[in-house]
Length: 268
Image (cartoon, rainbow, N blue to C red; front, top):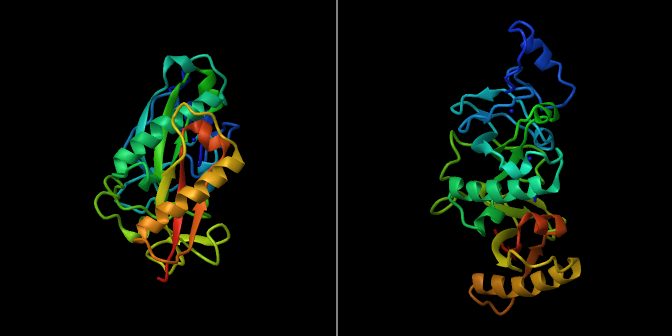
């Protein structure tokens, strides 16, 4: 699970946009000169056309678009970073931990999902911080965007005008996670609205917030055992069934994730 501003520059009005656009940092495609190296906290509720390449960068200054038009990302939470980050380095590991805790909670509330459903949807979120230049000027903020795809997506799908409440009640099949292929690991991840062989049916909790990472071997063993029980119950205790699982590693554990995903074989 994956971890992700406008500078009010004290420059002459005519020179400001030109200099901002010449920032040496890559802040995404189709950048807005007024947002490059931004120091002010971004506006929430804005939409953008982001790509996985954009999301892979720590800072983003892509132009906003009206949410009524086609877009692949929507900003759902922004704010100032706590004072504990005033003097830390730009790539401090605790920033990622804070972003995971902050954005994941806000994401679940925004789209209307519980802790389990969050891991079984084709939606995901990305976070951004100020550029290194803005960071050096004292900018300390975060921006959380919901995007129309997962960390495995080669491209993002367009979102509805707003993703707020999108997963409440009975979530649309087009935003639930399924897979097509002989196995979950080697299969292609697809929306459940498309033909598929596997469905992300449940998740299992493997630890408490303060637990140390148990290691990959233990994670795999526990996930395999717990998912067998969980999927069998989800399928209403058939005499024979097939299941798969996805477990996460130390990086995700350190960020705060304590769940693995269980997949049920389907005939859809």
